[in-house]
Length: 296
Image 1 (cartoon, rainbow, N blue to C red):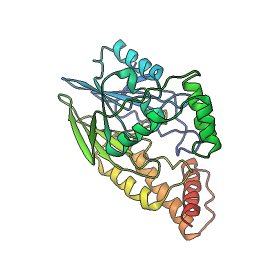
Image 2: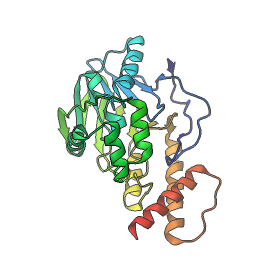
Image 3: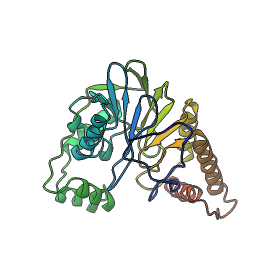
């Protein structure tokens, strides 16, 4: 395990439609990024970041991962570092890759009210190969989504979606003993139920996928602008995103905010063709163009 001091912050990174750059060097599987916070970086096929926050009284998991195997790997890594096993998990949103590992934890599930409703829908879904392919054919899921599920959960698969035990509406503070996790609903283009978790005193903000575009690859100023304002309203020093293999500094997020607003202005005003070599700006231009078409 690597212990990561706050000053060693690397740029965001992403693949596909997610907006970011390539990390300067790889992270280890489990990294201590704060006094109380342990982070496992994302990996294939679509495994997101997961974190554990260890307090004097209890340990809380942030997102549950995409399968029992994913969560088991994380719990085993924590045990190797003598970190107390989490007895609860709080979800950033309801997408499968962030919640299907909840059954392996066998602890309390904490979720926003919208997330709790969507968990019930996920539990009723047909997760067989035929069911996944049917959703793709009906336009309800992407082919990539089906491929990722099949790779993470080989057929024949049994999918257990654990319902929420504690449901909140706007915010919830969880005291772990010397460290507090503040959960806040923020929404956004990616998912209306998106929440973030702010860890104090570590100043770590766990973002999930809230900064990502929608399933249609779109961003809108109506949601993206206030979302970034909210994110930057936290006194965070370290930012953890769902599918980026590096953490971000506040300067990284501020820079991303500037690029986002510039790209939106180019698309809205038609003031230029938006030619740039910067990957973030290119991605934002594409996402706002997609959002503009959707709104037209």
